Image (cartoon, rainbow over all chains, first blue to last red; front, side):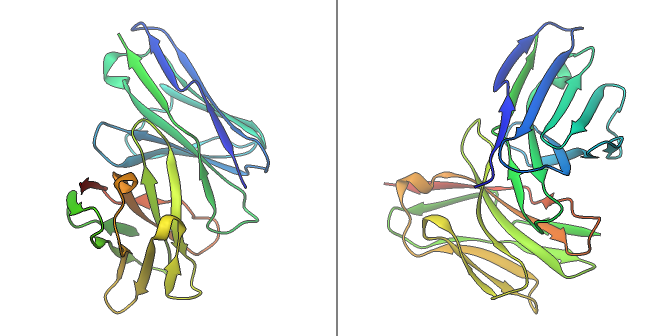
Length: 116
Length: 115
């Protein structure tokens, strides 16, 4: 079955530094990647949608200069949290989709980011 | 526009009892509907999905859901709860028109199983 590998699973960084989260589709081509943020005991909020080779489309209220998304290949997308602050601490989850497979979304295992 | 409402942020059932998690949706186009389960500090695992085929959908771990257009509902059920079913459950909707396929999630229901 389709597998998405997300790394790291946990990261602690100092305030002001940047953190990169990787999301790889291992056995299929991810034409679209979705990045979500989840606060404790809350639902998933879509941050942005990226199509391979194109600029990401950000949801309203998400700072594109703070959350940099790169989707340069069909198997890799990255989310970089720049100049992280404690309020950026959250659980980040990616989801990959192949446009040839309708209604099929494969989720990564998530990244717990803690900014101290 | 699309949205999902999950009634009950917390549901507790006894082991062996019926599990019923409620989900109502709103969508301007025919929807695809999903149920996902999430264990602590993990990603989402697909339980089942409705993609306009059979209205009664069977998923993994004994779960099933029925799409009822007249009630705009997609409730999740399991005849007999198991301790391992304790988790967070999310209902989600996506439109069926190509090019606008992002998932919209409900607020989630935390299922607790009482021994």
